[in-house]
Image (cartoon, rainbow, N blue to C red):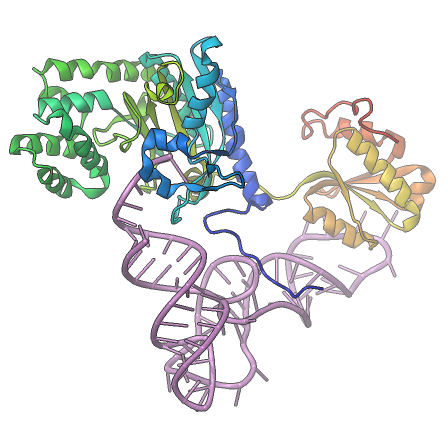
Length: 452
RNA sequence: GUGGGCGUAGCUCAGUCGGUUAGAGCGCCGGAUUGUGGUUCCGGAGGUCGCCGGUUCGAAUCCGGUCGUCCACCCCA
């Protein structure tokens, strides 16, 4: 026997014991149900990808954050940090033959090699929903509607979270109108992106550090401090390019308003989604109270497919992680009940009734019920204790007297009432008396699936 | 990657100035109960005090390192 040794989990990774997995599955079920409700079809790709796929898109500096290594064939590979490049790669080779727009969703596990914090691990699952091949604002609104409904489907409402929206083209026109030349846009976006966390004062300092003139700094600081839609309209009343750049978001809001989701929308000039590949409307979902990390982020990325060698197709989509969402649900008490349960617990009083009990159990299982029994030989009291601990709705007790009469005592563990029923009629009898709790018992086992 | 807080039973935590055999609640196992559960009562198991080293007659306690975790940066799925 080797000496005892303990193994710890890799940092930033999670174990999912049944209680935890119940929450994860609850989230997955909701994501899948809502996505399908909008007509999206599910896809997946490999968890490992060539390193180049991300260098192409985001630049070599992102390599620092990738969970990457060389494989035994000397290839530089990485655990996928996000799904969009994989989607772009998949579509690059086959989108030409596909009817547009393409509506796909996926729920990949993604990886990142960095220091973990609350809401941010080295691994997470992420709902990805994308529309490829449609450049219209209706597509932007459609994916945001999926994101909002995915969160609503988990029990959160407009008191709990908000969708902050912006448009990169609008930001570009505002910067131009403020007198920032094109070369300075990227640096400006970086400062504006941090404004929400850094505050107005630091933002002003940041903008001044970029060498912008005083009027440009004043204009942008004002927008960061009070970036309301009305404020923007007043400020640029006479600037046609800005007014025109506001139109897509107007229509976007009108569409979501017509869906009844208008209360979730909030224009926010500071939402620019880092320096990634976004080209149009961008959005993030945040919890209203706790100021956790973003629940979800996405937007339009019209040039990405081209970048990975596909046909040039416009695209829009988002990613929604399970970590922040799960913490939010926990905080709000919206986690599903994960206590064990089953329909029946079969009890035999002595070993002589075991065969009868096993046969009855198997029949009940074939009828679609979940059935347990004690694996160890023990008294009726102890077996009942186990039954209630396992969350059984009913106990089926078979002792010498029942066996002699070919019957069983069925005890309702909630009410304590019990009745004696013929063993042969057990399945039918219970189906009749418990039709409500057993919504739809599966039919008989398929041929060949149950050999005897 | 940088700076800081925290690591004691499966979980949440207490542990006095550095002092003899490290505790509680919950949970787990067993008994009261060999044909009737949940409640209750009684009992039990479970610890390298994260790990390594140092100071000391003596370390869960002080110091250094390390690992983990959390927070703030960095960055963002």
